[in-house]
View 1: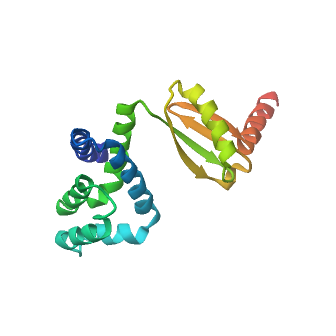
View 2: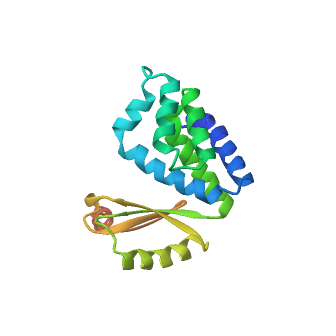
View 3: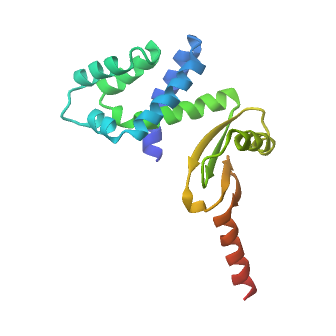
Length: 182
């Protein structure tokens, strides 16, 4: 989505620059992750904020009520700015872009882990150690997802590297091997 990136990037870069100056970067990154989770898990919230029927001033008041005690004033200012400019619909794109820039700045690799079932703390720790070796960095952030279609095991994506240790992946590879042999 190049167009969406070209719209969201200036907001994300400006937020990163301001929070860096105010030494709030790590705090705002955590707040961005938390808000993204809420935003993506609540279609009702998104629908209310992207509605053209609701005036920007009303949206800003709701943002103030909902988040004034939950986020830094800098982050709240961004939210109100997006509402004022009728750009709140791209909030997830702005926050995703901000988090990409934040990780780049901090040298943090993002590991997307999809498993067939929830991973125990011990399994996550073991995976963390292995992912550190694959990523070639000492800082890795996990993005965990559950997909029962994997049947068993997990898939790890770090940058362009993919490790498919899922049962579905093994079945697919076996099918390809059999097709080549036939």
